[in-house]
Amino acid sequence: MNKLLTAAVALLLISCHSAPRYGKRGNASITSTSSSGKVTKHRTIITGASSFYAEDFHGKITANGETYDMYGLTAAHKTLPFNTLVKVTNLDNDKSLTLRINDRGPYAKGRILDCSYGAAVKLGFVGEGTARVKIEVIEFGDNKYMKRKDK
Image (cartoon, rainbow, N blue to C red; front, side, top):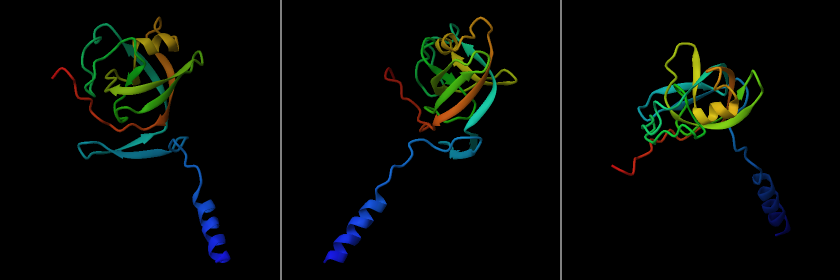
C-alpha cells in the first residue's frame, strides 16, 4: 500500500508541469493550415518595411470580416493567420506594441506589414509613412473569419 501511494504521488508530481503559453521563439518556422487547406510556413521573427492605412479604409470590412477601425491596434499581413498577436518594434526609434492581425496586405512591393493608423501613431512613423520594423509572433491566431452582426 505504501509503495502504491508513493508511486501515485511520484506520478502526480511528474505530470504537473507548466506548459509554455506561446510557441517557439527565434527564426524557427511554424506551419499552419488555412481554412482552404493550404499549408503555409510562418517565421516567428520577421524584419522589413511597414506602412499604415487610414481614412480610405476606415469603417470598411477587413479580410477577416470585422469593421476596420483606423484608431485600433491592428495590422494586415499577407499570410499570418487572422487573430495572430505580434509584437511590432520600430527599429528606427525602438518603440514597440502588440498588434492583432485582422486583414490581408500590404500589397506594395517590399513591405511586410500594414499597420492601422493608431498603431503607426504609437510606433512613431506617421510623418515618415513607412518604418523598418521587427515582427515577433507572440501567439498564432485561430484564423477565424468574424461574422458580421448586421447581416
